[in-house]
Image (tube, rainbow, N blue to C red; front, side, top):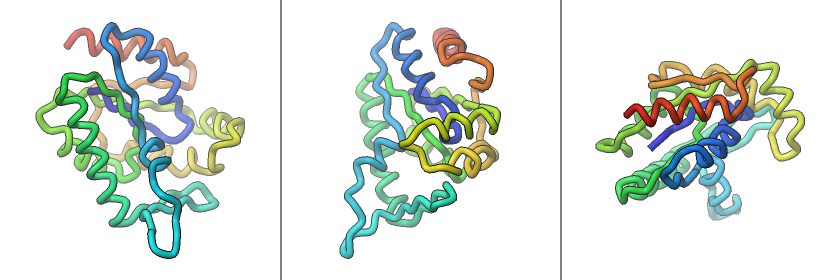
Length: 175
């Protein structure tokens, strides 16, 4: 199990694609975006508990936390069935979020990877992608890393996704 944590537009998805090409073992990739895409639309009878502000700030409530818990349990179940899993995550609560995910992954070998990127670069990437909420990269740049413990950190500012994935693959291969 590999968890990549970083702000929106930091390059996690690109690193994951390269990791999937590099590693000998099949690696299924899941991310918080997958969970969000799976949520039913907001209606008068259902509120998923996550709000994306126009400024890029993401607010989550108890209902989302319940769904997130189930999601984490499902990812852990896949990994416990001896399937390689990599998670693309933005730990909006920093260490508290890592602790929640870590509880679900208890008993599994987990490599925690911090994905860093210079804010100006992440903001430019975000602006170039029409599917992104503007401001998310800036609002998440610091908070996703607050208090988080990593086994390894990579920086996509000047390193390519392949270079970052190669660093992670070498680390995983040593374990």
